[in-house]
Length: 266
Length: 367
Image (cartoon, rainbow over all chains, first blue to last red; front, side, top):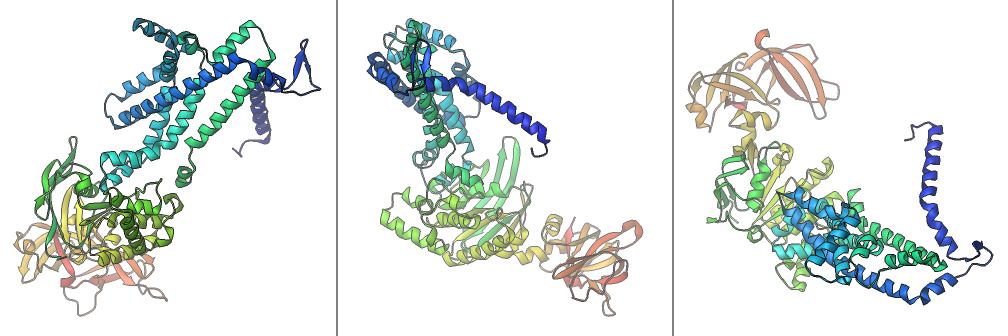
Protein backbone atom coordinates (compact mmCIF):
# COMPACT_ATOMS: atom_id res chain seq x y z
CA UNK A 1 0.00 0.00 0.00
CA UNK A 2 2.91 2.33 0.67
CA UNK A 3 3.48 2.32 -3.09
CA UNK A 4 0.40 4.50 -3.56
CA UNK A 5 1.16 8.14 -4.29
CA UNK A 6 0.63 10.50 -1.41
CA UNK A 7 -2.29 12.31 -3.00
CA UNK A 8 -4.38 9.18 -3.54
CA UNK A 9 -3.71 8.11 0.06
CA UNK A 10 -5.18 11.41 1.23
CA UNK A 11 -8.09 10.96 -1.14
CA UNK A 12 -8.82 7.44 0.16
CA UNK A 13 -8.60 8.65 3.75
CA UNK A 14 -11.09 11.41 2.97
CA UNK A 15 -13.54 8.95 1.39
CA UNK A 16 -13.20 6.59 4.36
CA UNK A 17 -13.84 9.39 6.81
CA UNK A 18 -16.87 10.56 4.85
CA UNK A 19 -18.36 7.07 4.78
CA UNK A 20 -17.73 6.62 8.49
CA UNK A 21 -19.37 9.94 9.29
CA UNK A 22 -22.40 9.17 7.12
CA UNK A 23 -22.75 5.72 8.66
CA UNK A 24 -22.30 6.64 12.25
CA UNK A 25 -23.41 10.23 12.77
CA UNK A 26 -27.14 9.39 12.80
CA UNK A 27 -26.37 7.06 15.69
CA UNK A 28 -24.92 9.83 17.79
CA UNK A 29 -27.92 12.12 17.46
CA UNK A 30 -30.26 10.13 19.72
CA UNK A 31 -27.43 9.43 22.17
CA UNK A 32 -26.58 13.09 22.49
CA UNK A 33 -30.15 14.26 22.60
CA UNK A 34 -31.05 11.68 25.24
CA UNK A 35 -29.02 13.74 27.69
CA UNK A 36 -30.78 17.02 26.98
CA UNK A 37 -34.33 18.20 27.29
CA UNK A 38 -36.22 19.33 24.22
CA UNK A 39 -38.82 22.00 24.46
CA UNK A 40 -40.75 23.47 21.55
CA UNK A 41 -38.55 21.65 19.05
CA UNK A 42 -35.36 23.20 20.39
CA UNK A 43 -32.64 21.32 22.22
CA UNK A 44 -31.68 22.93 25.49
CA UNK A 45 -27.90 22.47 25.41
CA UNK A 46 -27.29 24.34 28.64
CA UNK A 47 -28.35 21.66 31.08
CA UNK A 48 -27.44 18.03 30.54
CA UNK A 49 -29.90 15.80 32.31
CA UNK A 50 -30.78 12.18 32.89
CA UNK A 51 -34.47 12.94 33.07
CA UNK A 52 -35.29 10.99 29.89
CA UNK A 53 -33.76 7.93 31.47
CA UNK A 54 -35.83 8.45 34.60
CA UNK A 55 -38.98 8.69 32.55
CA UNK A 56 -37.98 5.54 30.75
CA UNK A 57 -37.35 3.66 33.98
CA UNK A 58 -40.82 4.62 35.20
CA UNK A 59 -42.47 3.36 32.05
CA UNK A 60 -43.85 -0.05 33.07
CA UNK A 61 -44.68 -1.03 29.52
CA UNK A 62 -41.06 -0.59 28.56
CA UNK A 63 -39.81 -2.59 31.53
CA UNK A 64 -42.22 -5.42 30.75
CA UNK A 65 -41.08 -5.40 27.14
CA UNK A 66 -37.45 -5.49 28.26
CA UNK A 67 -38.17 -8.50 30.43
CA UNK A 68 -39.93 -10.26 27.55
CA UNK A 69 -36.98 -9.52 25.27
CA UNK A 70 -34.53 -10.98 27.75
CA UNK A 71 -36.62 -14.13 28.25
CA UNK A 72 -36.96 -14.61 24.50
CA UNK A 73 -33.26 -13.90 23.99
CA UNK A 74 -32.06 -16.40 26.58
CA UNK A 75 -34.40 -19.13 25.35
CA UNK A 76 -33.39 -18.46 21.74
CA UNK A 77 -29.71 -18.62 22.65
CA UNK A 78 -30.07 -21.93 24.46
CA UNK A 79 -32.10 -23.53 21.68
CA UNK A 80 -29.97 -22.20 18.84
CA UNK A 81 -26.60 -22.98 20.44
CA UNK A 82 -27.58 -26.56 21.21
CA UNK A 83 -29.15 -27.25 17.83
CA UNK A 84 -26.60 -25.17 15.89
CA UNK A 85 -23.71 -27.08 17.49
CA UNK A 86 -25.36 -30.43 16.83
CA UNK A 87 -26.00 -29.46 13.21
CA UNK A 88 -22.40 -28.31 12.78
CA UNK A 89 -21.10 -31.59 14.22
CA UNK A 90 -23.45 -33.55 11.97
CA UNK A 91 -22.45 -31.55 8.91
CA UNK A 92 -18.75 -31.89 9.72
CA UNK A 93 -18.97 -35.66 9.96
CA UNK A 94 -21.00 -36.06 6.79
CA UNK A 95 -19.68 -36.74 3.32
CA UNK A 96 -22.76 -36.49 1.07
CA UNK A 97 -25.65 -34.06 0.86
CA UNK A 98 -23.67 -31.30 2.53
CA UNK A 99 -24.65 -28.46 0.24
CA UNK A 100 -28.36 -29.22 0.61
CA UNK A 101 -28.03 -29.19 4.41
CA UNK A 102 -26.10 -25.93 4.29
CA UNK A 103 -28.77 -24.38 2.07
CA UNK A 104 -31.62 -25.47 4.33
CA UNK A 105 -29.95 -23.99 7.40
CA UNK A 106 -29.13 -20.69 5.73
CA UNK A 107 -32.40 -20.12 3.93
CA UNK A 108 -34.38 -18.59 6.84
CA UNK A 109 -31.51 -16.21 7.56
CA UNK A 110 -31.23 -15.07 3.95
CA UNK A 111 -34.95 -14.81 3.22
CA UNK A 112 -36.65 -11.47 3.82
CA UNK A 113 -37.86 -11.59 7.46
CA UNK A 114 -41.39 -10.79 6.36
CA UNK A 115 -41.46 -13.98 4.29
CA UNK A 116 -40.02 -16.08 7.14
CA UNK A 117 -42.46 -14.43 9.54
CA UNK A 118 -45.49 -15.04 7.34
CA UNK A 119 -44.45 -18.62 6.65
CA UNK A 120 -44.09 -19.25 10.38
CA UNK A 121 -47.42 -17.55 11.09
CA UNK A 122 -49.23 -19.74 8.58
CA UNK A 123 -47.42 -22.80 9.89
CA UNK A 124 -48.35 -22.08 13.51
CA UNK A 125 -51.96 -21.54 12.56
CA UNK A 126 -52.08 -24.79 10.57
CA UNK A 127 -50.73 -26.85 13.45
CA UNK A 128 -52.94 -24.98 15.90
CA UNK A 129 -50.17 -23.44 17.98
CA UNK A 130 -51.40 -20.28 19.77
CA UNK A 131 -49.26 -17.18 19.22
CA UNK A 132 -47.27 -16.62 22.37
CA UNK A 133 -43.69 -16.18 23.56
CA UNK A 134 -43.10 -19.79 22.51
CA UNK A 135 -43.82 -18.96 18.88
CA UNK A 136 -41.54 -15.93 19.14
CA UNK A 137 -38.73 -18.10 20.50
CA UNK A 138 -39.22 -20.64 17.70
CA UNK A 139 -39.23 -17.84 15.12
CA UNK A 140 -36.06 -16.29 16.51
CA UNK A 141 -34.32 -19.65 16.74
CA UNK A 142 -35.05 -20.46 13.12
CA UNK A 143 -33.70 -17.05 12.19
CA UNK A 144 -30.44 -17.05 14.20
CA UNK A 145 -29.63 -20.76 13.86
CA UNK A 146 -27.50 -20.17 10.76
CA UNK A 147 -25.22 -17.75 12.62
CA UNK A 148 -24.50 -20.13 15.50
CA UNK A 149 -24.14 -23.05 13.11
CA UNK A 150 -21.70 -21.15 10.92
CA UNK A 151 -19.60 -19.93 13.85
CA UNK A 152 -19.29 -23.37 15.40
CA UNK A 153 -18.69 -25.06 12.06
CA UNK A 154 -15.85 -22.71 11.21
CA UNK A 155 -14.12 -23.49 14.47
CA UNK A 156 -14.72 -27.18 13.94
CA UNK A 157 -13.18 -27.01 10.48
CA UNK A 158 -10.15 -25.10 11.70
CA UNK A 159 -9.57 -27.70 14.42
CA UNK A 160 -6.87 -30.13 13.39
CA UNK A 161 -8.31 -33.56 12.59
CA UNK A 162 -5.38 -35.11 14.38
CA UNK A 163 -6.63 -33.76 17.74
CA UNK A 164 -9.51 -36.21 17.61
CA UNK A 165 -7.24 -38.95 16.30
CA UNK A 166 -4.74 -38.28 19.08
CA UNK A 167 -7.49 -38.56 21.68
CA UNK A 168 -8.60 -41.96 20.38
CA UNK A 169 -4.99 -43.00 20.00
CA UNK A 170 -4.42 -42.27 23.69
CA UNK A 171 -7.24 -44.62 24.59
CA UNK A 172 -10.22 -42.26 24.93
CA UNK A 173 -13.72 -43.37 23.96
CA UNK A 174 -15.86 -41.37 21.54
CA UNK A 175 -17.79 -39.87 24.45
CA UNK A 176 -14.60 -38.86 26.30
CA UNK A 177 -13.22 -37.36 23.09
CA UNK A 178 -16.36 -35.31 22.64
CA UNK A 179 -16.51 -33.95 26.20
CA UNK A 180 -12.82 -33.51 26.83
CA UNK A 181 -11.40 -32.51 23.46
CA UNK A 182 -14.04 -31.39 20.94
CA UNK A 183 -16.36 -29.43 23.22
CA UNK A 184 -13.67 -27.42 25.07
CA UNK A 185 -12.17 -26.43 21.74
CA UNK A 186 -15.58 -25.32 20.47
CA UNK A 187 -16.62 -23.51 23.63
CA UNK A 188 -15.36 -20.05 22.75
CA UNK A 189 -16.98 -20.30 19.32
CA UNK A 190 -20.21 -21.37 21.03
CA UNK A 191 -20.07 -18.38 23.40
CA UNK A 192 -19.32 -16.04 20.49
CA UNK A 193 -22.18 -17.54 18.50
CA UNK A 194 -24.48 -17.25 21.52
CA UNK A 195 -23.72 -13.54 21.92
CA UNK A 196 -24.37 -12.88 18.23
CA UNK A 197 -27.59 -14.89 18.48
CA UNK A 198 -28.66 -12.86 21.48
CA UNK A 199 -27.91 -9.58 19.70
CA UNK A 200 -29.94 -10.68 16.68
CA UNK A 201 -32.84 -11.87 18.82
CA UNK A 202 -32.72 -8.63 20.81
CA UNK A 203 -33.14 -6.52 17.66
CA UNK A 204 -35.47 -8.75 15.70
CA UNK A 205 -38.70 -6.90 14.86
CA UNK A 206 -40.46 -8.14 11.74
CA UNK A 207 -40.79 -11.83 12.58
CA UNK A 208 -41.66 -10.91 16.18
CA UNK A 209 -44.52 -8.63 15.18
CA UNK A 210 -46.00 -11.38 13.04
CA UNK A 211 -45.74 -14.30 15.43
CA UNK A 212 -46.09 -12.71 18.86
CA UNK A 213 -49.23 -12.94 20.95
CA UNK A 214 -50.15 -10.22 23.40
CA UNK A 215 -46.68 -9.56 24.77
CA UNK A 216 -44.28 -7.34 22.88
CA UNK A 217 -40.53 -7.26 22.88
CA UNK A 218 -38.50 -4.08 23.20
CA UNK A 219 -38.11 -3.29 19.48
CA UNK A 220 -41.80 -3.97 18.93
CA UNK A 221 -42.65 -1.73 21.86
CA UNK A 222 -40.39 0.95 20.46
CA UNK A 223 -42.10 0.73 17.12
CA UNK A 224 -45.50 1.07 18.79
CA UNK A 225 -44.27 4.14 20.72
CA UNK A 226 -43.06 5.76 17.50
CA UNK A 227 -46.48 5.36 15.93
CA UNK A 228 -48.05 7.31 18.76
CA UNK A 229 -45.59 10.16 18.39
CA UNK A 230 -42.07 10.97 19.32
CA UNK A 231 -41.35 11.21 23.00
CA UNK A 232 -37.95 12.08 24.48
CA UNK A 233 -37.59 8.78 26.33
CA UNK A 234 -37.32 7.07 22.93
CA UNK A 235 -33.93 8.74 22.61
CA UNK A 236 -32.89 7.18 25.88
CA UNK A 237 -34.19 3.77 24.82
CA UNK A 238 -32.37 3.93 21.47
CA UNK A 239 -29.18 5.00 23.19
CA UNK A 240 -29.40 2.10 25.63
CA UNK A 241 -30.12 -0.49 22.96
CA UNK A 242 -27.31 0.88 20.84
CA UNK A 243 -24.74 0.72 23.61
CA UNK A 244 -25.87 -2.73 24.65
CA UNK A 245 -25.63 -4.04 21.09
CA UNK A 246 -22.16 -2.57 20.61
CA UNK A 247 -21.07 -4.19 23.86
CA UNK A 248 -22.39 -7.56 22.69
CA UNK A 249 -20.55 -7.28 19.38
CA UNK A 250 -17.28 -6.41 21.10
CA UNK A 251 -17.74 -9.39 23.42
CA UNK A 252 -18.55 -11.70 20.52
CA UNK A 253 -15.44 -10.61 18.64
CA UNK A 254 -13.35 -11.33 21.72
CA UNK A 255 -14.63 -14.87 21.99
CA UNK A 256 -14.47 -15.60 18.30
CA UNK A 257 -10.78 -14.76 18.12
CA UNK A 258 -9.41 -16.42 21.25
CA UNK A 259 -5.94 -15.27 22.20
CA UNK A 260 -4.56 -18.75 22.53
CA UNK A 261 -5.41 -19.68 18.98
CA UNK A 262 -4.15 -16.34 17.73
CA UNK A 263 -0.70 -16.79 19.26
CA UNK A 264 -0.42 -20.35 18.06
CA UNK A 265 -0.86 -19.28 14.46
CA UNK A 266 1.92 -16.72 14.56
CA UNK B 1 12.75 -57.45 25.25
CA UNK B 2 14.26 -59.81 22.79
CA UNK B 3 15.19 -58.29 19.48
CA UNK B 4 14.78 -61.63 17.77
CA UNK B 5 11.10 -62.09 18.48
CA UNK B 6 8.54 -60.41 16.29
CA UNK B 7 6.30 -57.94 18.05
CA UNK B 8 4.10 -57.03 15.15
CA UNK B 9 3.59 -58.70 11.78
CA UNK B 10 1.88 -57.33 8.70
CA UNK B 11 0.74 -60.05 6.34
CA UNK B 12 -0.15 -59.22 2.73
CA UNK B 13 -1.63 -55.92 3.83
CA UNK B 14 -3.25 -53.84 1.11
CA UNK B 15 -4.94 -50.48 1.30
CA UNK B 16 -6.95 -48.55 -1.25
CA UNK B 17 -8.69 -45.22 -0.96
CA UNK B 18 -11.74 -45.78 -3.10
CA UNK B 19 -10.31 -47.27 -6.24
CA UNK B 20 -6.83 -45.83 -5.71
CA UNK B 21 -4.47 -48.45 -4.31
CA UNK B 22 -1.82 -47.04 -1.96
CA UNK B 23 -0.34 -50.25 -0.52
CA UNK B 24 0.17 -53.49 -2.39
CA UNK B 25 0.51 -56.72 -0.44
CA UNK B 26 2.89 -55.50 2.26
CA UNK B 27 4.67 -58.06 4.43
CA UNK B 28 6.60 -56.62 7.34
CA UNK B 29 7.76 -57.86 10.72
CA UNK B 30 8.69 -55.46 13.48
CA UNK B 31 11.00 -56.93 16.11
CA UNK B 32 10.49 -56.35 19.78
CA UNK B 33 12.59 -53.45 21.04
CA UNK B 34 13.98 -52.32 17.70
CA UNK B 35 14.07 -48.87 16.14
CA UNK B 36 12.57 -49.46 12.72
CA UNK B 37 12.47 -46.62 10.23
CA UNK B 38 10.11 -46.62 7.27
CA UNK B 39 11.79 -44.52 4.62
CA UNK B 40 10.33 -43.43 1.33
CA UNK B 41 9.56 -40.46 -0.88
CA UNK B 42 6.19 -38.76 -0.45
CA UNK B 43 3.39 -40.84 -1.86
CA UNK B 44 5.23 -44.09 -1.17
CA UNK B 45 2.61 -45.23 1.35
CA UNK B 46 4.85 -45.00 4.42
CA UNK B 47 2.42 -42.89 6.47
CA UNK B 48 -0.42 -45.23 5.48
CA UNK B 49 1.52 -48.16 6.96
CA UNK B 50 1.76 -46.26 10.23
CA UNK B 51 -1.91 -45.28 10.21
CA UNK B 52 -2.97 -48.87 9.54
CA UNK B 53 -0.88 -50.15 12.44
CA UNK B 54 -2.17 -47.41 14.73
CA UNK B 55 -5.72 -48.21 13.74
CA UNK B 56 -6.44 -44.78 12.28
CA UNK B 57 -7.46 -46.39 9.00
CA UNK B 58 -9.07 -49.77 8.30
CA UNK B 59 -7.23 -52.35 6.19
CA UNK B 60 -8.55 -53.14 2.74
CA UNK B 61 -7.16 -56.68 2.99
CA UNK B 62 -4.54 -58.68 4.84
CA UNK B 63 -3.96 -58.81 8.56
CA UNK B 64 -1.91 -57.30 11.36
CA UNK B 65 -0.76 -59.57 14.18
CA UNK B 66 0.48 -58.52 17.59
CA UNK B 67 2.27 -61.35 19.44
CA UNK B 68 0.63 -63.67 16.93
CA UNK B 69 -2.90 -62.38 17.66
CA UNK B 70 -4.87 -60.80 14.82
CA UNK B 71 -5.60 -57.20 15.77
CA UNK B 72 -6.72 -55.99 12.33
CA UNK B 73 -10.16 -55.12 13.62
CA UNK B 74 -9.19 -53.94 17.09
CA UNK B 75 -10.43 -50.36 17.60
CA UNK B 76 -7.80 -47.67 17.79
CA UNK B 77 -8.37 -46.86 21.47
CA UNK B 78 -7.70 -50.44 22.54
CA UNK B 79 -4.45 -50.92 20.64
CA UNK B 80 -1.41 -50.79 22.90
CA UNK B 81 0.31 -48.34 20.53
CA UNK B 82 0.66 -44.59 20.75
CA UNK B 83 1.41 -42.11 18.04
CA UNK B 84 3.52 -38.98 17.82
CA UNK B 85 1.78 -37.02 15.10
CA UNK B 86 3.53 -34.93 12.49
CA UNK B 87 1.78 -31.77 13.70
CA UNK B 88 2.14 -33.03 17.32
CA UNK B 89 -1.67 -32.75 17.80
CA UNK B 90 -1.26 -31.34 21.30
CA UNK B 91 -4.57 -30.38 22.90
CA UNK B 92 -4.47 -26.56 22.91
CA UNK B 93 -6.83 -26.18 25.88
CA UNK B 94 -4.80 -28.43 28.19
CA UNK B 95 -1.51 -27.65 29.89
CA UNK B 96 1.60 -29.69 29.25
CA UNK B 97 0.81 -31.97 32.18
CA UNK B 98 -2.84 -32.15 31.11
CA UNK B 99 -1.69 -33.28 27.69
CA UNK B 100 0.80 -35.80 29.00
CA UNK B 101 -1.63 -37.21 31.57
CA UNK B 102 -4.55 -37.47 29.14
CA UNK B 103 -3.93 -41.11 28.23
CA UNK B 104 -3.97 -42.04 31.91
CA UNK B 105 -6.94 -39.93 32.94
CA UNK B 106 -9.22 -41.37 30.25
CA UNK B 107 -8.45 -44.75 31.79
CA UNK B 108 -9.67 -43.46 35.16
CA UNK B 109 -6.34 -43.87 36.90
CA UNK B 110 -6.07 -42.13 40.30
CA UNK B 111 -5.01 -38.49 40.28
CA UNK B 112 -2.02 -39.12 42.53
CA UNK B 113 -0.74 -41.86 40.30
CA UNK B 114 -1.25 -39.69 37.21
CA UNK B 115 0.64 -36.79 38.79
CA UNK B 116 3.53 -39.07 39.68
CA UNK B 117 3.80 -40.62 36.22
CA UNK B 118 3.38 -37.26 34.45
CA UNK B 119 6.26 -35.83 36.49
CA UNK B 120 8.34 -38.89 35.63
CA UNK B 121 7.57 -38.63 31.91
CA UNK B 122 8.28 -34.89 31.85
CA UNK B 123 11.61 -35.49 33.56
CA UNK B 124 12.45 -38.08 30.95
CA UNK B 125 11.94 -35.55 28.16
CA UNK B 126 13.53 -32.77 30.27
CA UNK B 127 10.41 -30.61 30.43
CA UNK B 128 9.75 -30.70 34.17
CA UNK B 129 9.76 -26.92 34.42
CA UNK B 130 7.11 -26.50 31.74
CA UNK B 131 4.33 -28.60 33.30
CA UNK B 132 1.90 -25.68 33.66
CA UNK B 133 2.46 -24.06 30.29
CA UNK B 134 0.06 -24.33 27.39
CA UNK B 135 1.22 -25.78 24.07
CA UNK B 136 1.01 -22.33 22.43
CA UNK B 137 3.67 -21.12 24.86
CA UNK B 138 6.23 -23.75 23.82
CA UNK B 139 8.81 -23.87 21.05
CA UNK B 140 8.64 -26.47 18.28
CA UNK B 141 11.23 -28.72 19.91
CA UNK B 142 9.45 -28.53 23.27
CA UNK B 143 6.08 -29.40 21.73
CA UNK B 144 7.75 -32.32 20.07
CA UNK B 145 8.97 -33.58 23.42
CA UNK B 146 5.52 -33.11 25.01
CA UNK B 147 4.05 -35.22 22.21
CA UNK B 148 6.67 -37.88 22.89
CA UNK B 149 6.02 -37.86 26.66
CA UNK B 150 2.29 -38.10 26.02
CA UNK B 151 2.82 -41.12 23.77
CA UNK B 152 5.15 -43.02 26.07
CA UNK B 153 3.35 -42.45 29.38
CA UNK B 154 0.83 -45.20 28.62
CA UNK B 155 3.74 -47.65 28.26
CA UNK B 156 2.70 -48.75 24.77
CA UNK B 157 4.18 -51.83 23.14
CA UNK B 158 5.02 -49.73 20.10
CA UNK B 159 5.45 -46.00 19.55
CA UNK B 160 4.55 -44.75 16.09
CA UNK B 161 6.27 -41.57 14.96
CA UNK B 162 4.97 -39.85 11.82
CA UNK B 163 7.76 -37.60 10.50
CA UNK B 164 7.96 -35.92 13.89
CA UNK B 165 11.07 -33.91 13.08
CA UNK B 166 9.92 -32.54 9.72
CA UNK B 167 8.88 -29.17 11.13
CA UNK B 168 12.11 -28.52 13.03
CA UNK B 169 15.17 -26.70 11.72
CA UNK B 170 18.31 -28.65 10.90
CA UNK B 171 20.25 -28.12 14.14
CA UNK B 172 17.27 -28.97 16.33
CA UNK B 173 16.47 -31.94 14.15
CA UNK B 174 19.94 -33.38 14.74
CA UNK B 175 19.65 -32.86 18.49
CA UNK B 176 16.23 -34.51 18.50
CA UNK B 177 17.57 -37.51 16.57
CA UNK B 178 20.13 -38.17 19.26
CA UNK B 179 17.54 -37.48 21.95
CA UNK B 180 14.93 -39.83 20.46
CA UNK B 181 17.47 -42.59 20.09
CA UNK B 182 18.63 -42.23 23.69
CA UNK B 183 15.04 -42.25 24.97
CA UNK B 184 14.33 -45.35 22.95
CA UNK B 185 17.34 -47.09 24.52
CA UNK B 186 16.29 -45.96 27.97
CA UNK B 187 12.65 -47.09 27.87
CA UNK B 188 13.44 -50.10 25.64
CA UNK B 189 10.24 -49.65 23.65
CA UNK B 190 9.85 -50.48 19.98
CA UNK B 191 9.82 -47.40 17.76
CA UNK B 192 8.36 -47.26 14.28
CA UNK B 193 9.61 -44.05 12.74
CA UNK B 194 8.35 -42.77 9.40
CA UNK B 195 10.47 -40.32 7.45
CA UNK B 196 11.43 -39.23 3.96
CA UNK B 197 14.84 -38.06 5.16
CA UNK B 198 17.53 -40.70 4.64
CA UNK B 199 20.01 -38.93 6.87
CA UNK B 200 17.49 -39.24 9.72
CA UNK B 201 16.94 -42.89 8.86
CA UNK B 202 20.64 -43.76 8.84
CA UNK B 203 21.28 -41.87 12.04
CA UNK B 204 18.66 -43.56 14.19
CA UNK B 205 17.42 -46.84 12.79
CA UNK B 206 18.40 -50.37 13.73
CA UNK B 207 16.69 -51.40 10.53
CA UNK B 208 15.29 -49.43 7.64
CA UNK B 209 12.35 -50.37 5.47
CA UNK B 210 12.52 -48.58 2.12
CA UNK B 211 9.17 -48.02 0.44
CA UNK B 212 8.24 -46.83 -3.01
CA UNK B 213 4.87 -46.62 -4.75
CA UNK B 214 3.09 -48.75 -2.16
CA UNK B 215 5.70 -51.52 -2.14
CA UNK B 216 8.46 -52.38 0.30
CA UNK B 217 11.63 -52.32 -1.77
CA UNK B 218 14.13 -53.43 0.84
CA UNK B 219 14.34 -54.06 4.56
CA UNK B 220 17.68 -54.20 6.29
CA UNK B 221 20.28 -52.46 8.40
CA UNK B 222 21.49 -49.06 7.20
CA UNK B 223 24.80 -50.75 6.31
CA UNK B 224 23.05 -53.39 4.19
CA UNK B 225 20.97 -50.82 2.38
CA UNK B 226 23.99 -48.70 1.66
CA UNK B 227 26.31 -51.42 0.48
CA UNK B 228 23.91 -54.09 -0.77
CA UNK B 229 20.91 -52.36 -2.31
CA UNK B 230 18.71 -54.97 -3.95
CA UNK B 231 17.22 -52.80 -6.66
CA UNK B 232 17.83 -49.70 -8.70
CA UNK B 233 15.43 -47.61 -6.62
CA UNK B 234 17.22 -48.27 -3.34
CA UNK B 235 20.64 -47.86 -4.98
CA UNK B 236 19.65 -44.42 -6.24
CA UNK B 237 17.45 -43.26 -3.35
CA UNK B 238 19.66 -44.24 -0.47
CA UNK B 239 22.79 -42.12 -0.48
CA UNK B 240 24.74 -40.83 -3.46
CA UNK B 241 25.66 -43.48 -5.98
CA UNK B 242 27.16 -44.05 -9.42
CA UNK B 243 25.12 -46.44 -11.54
CA UNK B 244 26.46 -47.72 -14.85
CA UNK B 245 24.19 -49.89 -16.98
CA UNK B 246 25.48 -53.10 -18.55
CA UNK B 247 25.04 -56.84 -19.15
CA UNK B 248 26.00 -59.41 -16.55
CA UNK B 249 29.09 -61.52 -17.26
CA UNK B 250 30.61 -64.55 -15.60
CA UNK B 251 30.64 -65.37 -11.87
CA UNK B 252 34.11 -65.61 -10.33
CA UNK B 253 33.62 -66.79 -6.77
CA UNK B 254 32.33 -63.82 -4.74
CA UNK B 255 32.72 -61.49 -7.72
CA UNK B 256 30.88 -61.09 -10.97
CA UNK B 257 31.77 -59.12 -14.06
CA UNK B 258 29.52 -56.76 -15.99
CA UNK B 259 30.07 -55.38 -19.51
CA UNK B 260 29.44 -51.63 -19.52
CA UNK B 261 30.20 -48.52 -21.52
CA UNK B 262 33.23 -48.15 -19.26
CA UNK B 263 34.47 -51.60 -20.22
CA UNK B 264 34.36 -54.73 -18.12
CA UNK B 265 33.79 -53.98 -14.43
CA UNK B 266 34.06 -56.49 -11.59
CA UNK B 267 31.81 -56.17 -8.54
CA UNK B 268 31.14 -58.04 -5.31
CA UNK B 269 28.11 -60.36 -5.05
CA UNK B 270 28.85 -61.80 -1.60
CA UNK B 271 25.73 -62.79 0.41
CA UNK B 272 23.47 -61.95 -2.53
CA UNK B 273 22.49 -65.31 -4.05
CA UNK B 274 20.02 -63.73 -6.46
CA UNK B 275 22.96 -61.99 -8.18
CA UNK B 276 24.86 -65.22 -8.43
CA UNK B 277 21.81 -66.93 -9.90
CA UNK B 278 20.95 -64.24 -12.45
CA UNK B 279 21.44 -65.30 -16.09
CA UNK B 280 24.48 -64.15 -18.01
CA UNK B 281 23.65 -61.26 -20.33
CA UNK B 282 20.88 -60.01 -18.03
CA UNK B 283 20.58 -56.24 -17.74
CA UNK B 284 22.04 -54.85 -14.55
CA UNK B 285 23.86 -51.88 -13.10
CA UNK B 286 27.30 -51.66 -11.64
CA UNK B 287 26.96 -49.41 -8.60
CA UNK B 288 29.79 -47.77 -6.72
CA UNK B 289 29.78 -44.94 -4.21
CA UNK B 290 31.46 -41.59 -4.96
CA UNK B 291 33.80 -42.20 -2.01
CA UNK B 292 34.77 -45.65 -3.35
CA UNK B 293 35.96 -44.13 -6.63
CA UNK B 294 39.58 -42.92 -6.64
CA UNK B 295 42.36 -41.84 -8.96
CA UNK B 296 43.94 -44.98 -10.35
CA UNK B 297 47.58 -45.83 -9.71
CA UNK B 298 49.77 -48.62 -11.08
CA UNK B 299 48.38 -51.23 -8.66
CA UNK B 300 44.83 -50.85 -9.92
CA UNK B 301 44.33 -53.37 -12.66
CA UNK B 302 40.57 -53.98 -12.26
CA UNK B 303 37.75 -51.50 -12.88
CA UNK B 304 40.02 -48.98 -14.50
CA UNK B 305 38.68 -46.35 -16.86
CA UNK B 306 39.46 -42.81 -17.89
CA UNK B 307 37.39 -39.67 -17.89
CA UNK B 308 37.43 -35.90 -17.80
CA UNK B 309 36.59 -33.73 -14.81
CA UNK B 310 33.70 -31.49 -15.86
CA UNK B 311 33.02 -29.82 -12.53
CA UNK B 312 34.37 -29.49 -8.99
CA UNK B 313 32.03 -28.73 -6.09
CA UNK B 314 33.33 -27.91 -2.61
CA UNK B 315 30.97 -29.39 0.00
CA UNK B 316 32.71 -28.72 3.29
CA UNK B 317 34.47 -31.81 4.56
CA UNK B 318 34.59 -33.30 1.09
CA UNK B 319 34.82 -32.11 -2.48
CA UNK B 320 32.77 -33.73 -5.22
CA UNK B 321 34.10 -33.95 -8.76
CA UNK B 322 31.69 -34.60 -11.61
CA UNK B 323 33.38 -36.74 -14.23
CA UNK B 324 32.42 -37.58 -17.79
CA UNK B 325 33.72 -41.03 -18.64
CA UNK B 326 33.41 -43.52 -21.47
CA UNK B 327 33.08 -43.11 -25.23
CA UNK B 328 31.35 -40.00 -26.55
CA UNK B 329 28.23 -41.84 -27.65
CA UNK B 330 27.79 -43.55 -24.27
CA UNK B 331 29.24 -40.95 -21.91
CA UNK B 332 28.58 -41.59 -18.24
CA UNK B 333 28.41 -38.90 -15.57
CA UNK B 334 30.10 -40.09 -12.42
CA UNK B 335 30.74 -38.52 -9.07
CA UNK B 336 34.03 -38.75 -7.23
CA UNK B 337 34.24 -37.66 -3.62
CA UNK B 338 37.60 -36.74 -2.11
CA UNK B 339 38.41 -35.26 1.30
CA UNK B 340 38.76 -31.46 1.16
CA UNK B 341 42.15 -29.86 1.79
CA UNK B 342 42.88 -26.32 2.87
CA UNK B 343 45.25 -25.69 -0.06
CA UNK B 344 42.65 -26.86 -2.57
CA UNK B 345 42.26 -30.08 -4.44
CA UNK B 346 44.92 -31.45 -6.75
CA UNK B 347 42.11 -32.02 -9.23
CA UNK B 348 41.23 -29.33 -11.73
CA UNK B 349 38.16 -28.93 -13.87
CA UNK B 350 38.86 -30.03 -17.45
CA UNK B 351 41.65 -32.38 -16.41
CA UNK B 352 41.78 -35.93 -17.82
CA UNK B 353 42.00 -38.57 -15.11
CA UNK B 354 42.30 -42.30 -14.78
CA UNK B 355 39.90 -43.77 -12.22
CA UNK B 356 39.26 -47.03 -10.45
CA UNK B 357 37.34 -48.66 -7.63
CA UNK B 358 38.11 -51.86 -5.75
CA UNK B 359 35.93 -54.83 -6.82
CA UNK B 360 34.71 -55.46 -3.27
CA UNK B 361 33.50 -51.83 -3.07
CA UNK B 362 31.36 -52.15 -6.16
CA UNK B 363 28.04 -53.94 -6.16
CA UNK B 364 25.45 -55.02 -8.69
CA UNK B 365 21.76 -54.36 -8.95
CA UNK B 366 19.47 -55.98 -11.47
CA UNK B 367 17.72 -53.60 -13.83
